[in-house]
Length: 380
Image (cartoon, rainbow, N blue to C red):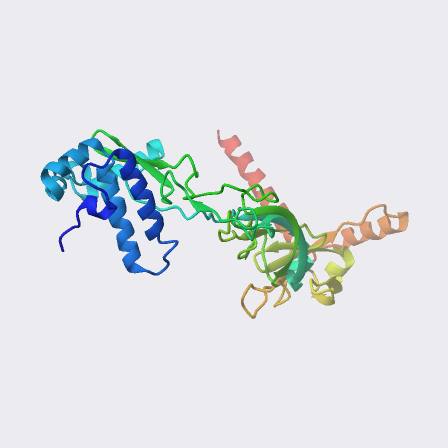
């Protein structure tokens, strides 16, 4: 399909001045702008044609080449992508200039709307809350859509207009050597729209700051550092743009009795020397607020652990619980009476290797070690 003449596209004569060409472009761009013709493919095609024609005719050198050679002036490397190096080369240089100068060679169109920022809220909960789950309410200051202008940023009774400098694209171009560079439009700051009469309530931003109360559902089994996302509860977008999200980061406070490792709980329980020696039972609390009894076998040593199956934390998004581990700490008696001392001394006198196998074994190993050192010293 043959391209239309650029002068016909802009509806100007070949002798038209730069001012006439610019005025014709603005008129055509506003008429066929996609925002004014949503879903109209023909209007979108005409808008692209208008932009292409204007990019050539506004540049004296390109216009002169077009007047002499027509569309052929920009084919076969005479004026195409990056002087004939192809689309890949053009894209590479677009990324390069975007990173270095904040410019690009690609086409863009501003919509005037910007997505709102995501927000973060830090919440501390107890281990009990993490076990049971919790419905909490939080209050956060955030930006919400301005009611006075319904988020448009324009004063009631008025509407934003297409930026006259960039024609609604949000970027302006200028030629530099072999390249046509783009930068953010300084008039509309990349939004593609301008507001002659900004809303007094929001100063044209389309949003105001308010304190909001939000409900947060904390499921059972959450761990320290769990992130909960509330979609659309972040800052309101600029000039009617979509809102950001709110991310709630959970931290779990220290518990006076339990230490957590994943879904398992650990606790240390002191028992008397007599209970450890003779056996018995100790009562320990559980995370669900109840109590359970742990049987202590005869001759239990300090440090021994007992596992209580499924008495730990819920596993997030699973129908199971971790375990609870009770570690026994044998307590040495303090501040003994005279009678108690006598009884312990008598007990020690009557003790044998059978009643204290670890102590007897340790002393035997020490004796062997020392005897070995003495024999080596004598032979030397």
